[in-house]
Length: 172
Image (cartoon, rainbow, N blue to C red; front, side):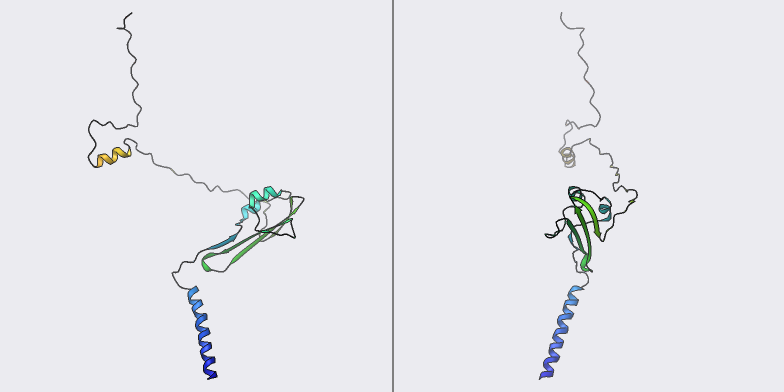
């Protein structure tokens, strides 16, 4: 009896473990990207300079993730990313202040002394010219045949100026 109880408990534990493995690795199941903390990239770190004030750092990096009660002059930025159920990636970055100015940097990022040229992310898109001869209502009514012949249509050209009245036949 004791051997069969051990055997069934082993089978039950294996099935529980295998179910969790199968549930986490089902094909075709969407898994969300989990991002937590402060999103920090190298271009933000390159903007930091020694002697910057806390307000300037707040403008560049945002508020810190951790506010340590015991170390008021230390700001910790932590970023955790777990894309689609893959392994978790954690990046940490700490700033040290003395008299409200940056004196030290520690963590996974290092500021570059020569950041290189900035690449513009903007692009130019050419939009085709629109034909504004008719309004939307005129287009809809013309499709259904409600447009009468005497209804004027808008033209994109400028209207001709009216001629000034002649002064030849005016009474004196």
